Image (cartoon, rainbow, N blue to C red; front, top):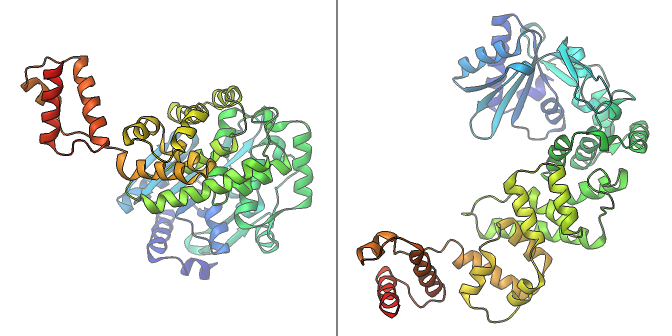
Length: 424
């Protein structure tokens, strides 16, 4: 494993060396674990280090953060901490622990344990390996569950027969890892998964936990493949009864990916899209507004997420028909699209391939979105107008004129205001 570690960037080698020094200083054995080890062996990029400490993970993290001059977030209740390294990477540090599930699908009870206990609580063999960073055994691979063999065989395998009973969210993670690495779910693991599905284990999980796993699934590079595979294995009854992925939804998911790419290339200066939300809305495209509202409430989405999802479902044919005309006034395009989120607009563009419709959306994003007028309340007050609702009416008329190219400069806006006041 030393060769794998030597192939890391200088920055990561230095981080691991410092962690090794802290391990010796505080006399606490420490190990690289989980996804970092998996991706290291697969040659995949992973900017997050996971370290398990036999001892006191928070104290270890405090020492390491001080040595690195980095920020630290403590999670005292769980015996874990996160060290923030720059913008894109972090170090997660945990006290080694064992877990016990008091009942199926419940959150586990946790107590301190050794490294083997910690690895035994993990989901799949490929995520249950460790690399020692202790001075006397630095670089030694520790594997109790056949992880390297499963990596070579490209297999997703659980560690025991009750894995999906204890934590049914592992079903979604099995799909995520299988599709990400083009692996296959090992036959016995598939059998355990089917048995868990037969007794509806996913329906017994807290919806918030399922929501987080669904979001991770949709944040992968190929969310459409993940959704199709999930339907093959367990269906979507745990999300909403009767929910299915038809051919139209599959096509929309694919086109959504193309439109996301178009937006990112065309408007790099705009805020980054919540791509997962676009895919989620595409996935729910065939569901009724009532069903979508029920799903949002069940999974307790954030208000901003729920608002964007529901606003897309409220878009009617009249909007689409109007924006499919050859000539639409700019102020009308603005009034139709400005209330919508970028996510809803991009999915609209994916759903409707009419060239005129797409042209109006592109024009909105290029020229109309974010358009502002120069005149302010201070200008109106200087003209003798007292603050009130009339301000808003005047601003709306000036913005409409500006969108339609009737006024351009601050002086022209002010002259228009004066005319409107005189004509009142």
